[in-house]
Amino acid sequence: MDALLLCPTSRASANQRSGRAGRTGPGRAYRLFTANAMANEMLESSVPEIQRTNLSHVVLLLKSLGVRDLLEFDFMDPPPEENIVKSMHGLWMLGALDSHGNLTDLGRRMATFPLDPPLAKMLLAGEREGCSQEVATIVAMLSVPSVFFRPRDREEEADAAREKFFVPESDHLTLLHVYQRWRSGGERADWCAKHFLNARGLRRAKEVRSQLIEVMKDEKIALTTCGTDWDSIRKAVTSAYFHQAAKMKGIGEYINMRSAVVCAVHPTSSLYGAGFTPDYVVYHELIYTQKEYMSCVTVVEPQWLAEMGPMFFTLKYSGGRTLKTNSAAAGEEQSTPYQDDVSAASSVQNKIEKSRKRANARGMVTPGRRDKVPRTPARFGM
Image (cartoon, rainbow, N blue to C red; front, top):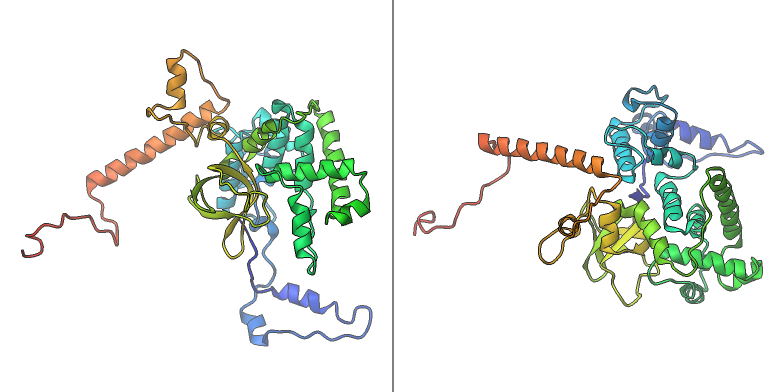
């Protein structure tokens, strides 16, 4: 989750900022805090970025360089072990690492792209689904700031122009639609101004896309297009963000299927106020402002979640049988690239359940917990 948090500045940062006054001419710096606060409450220096950000891309690069034990790696500013473990777990979910923490063939291919691991996984999934060019466009649009702008005195006009590009099923497809319309419009600056789009951002997305295409050619990735079959693009998005899936909880509310965090569709999304509420969605990131909002949302089918993330999701039918049971009954052999990882996760879960049973058998007492006792007349003196 991305959150904009207010925190005190450090002494080194405050001194660096005050040094700007008088650099090119006479100046004076005014400090909006007391000398006691600077001496006793502020940190000596800012917390290094490696200790407060997602390390998935760093871990993937170190694994591709042959570093086996990341917890013993000699970082200049060692990040918390919890962050490293969480990043390795995220790479395992994407298939970049196996159950033993070793780099897989998919992980080696993902490491060649200068992207976050989910975006690299999306590009490789686009090759499998036959839509690598469209996915490259979406990844490029996600790699630049938002191309929509909303002038303060023309909000209604900007919102109306933005709605013309909306694809109700997906914000990712909306970005693709914007790029294709911009290319068909001649990439003109006046066309962008008319439709309240940032021409500089679109040109930057074009440059990023050309660089990605060059990397894909070097890695012998087929450049394919799906035409108007945009369901294959949504499948590619699902394969990269199935671990960020949410299920409808109520009107306008969703709940994360793994962390149970209640979130909502962002007001700038094409799904916001679309007139229908899909049952299952995946999102690019979770942003916390007044509440948790899902940014860049795509509608998905539950079958895709069970197919792309078998370690977390199982599709059940009304008869109570799972998808695997029905396939076995039909005489089909079902195998996934994550079969070993699923069995490893099941083994860990079984060990946890056994330890819980042993704890219950010993009668362990949890502080603050009350066992439910039947409400009988004798208990209340009746």
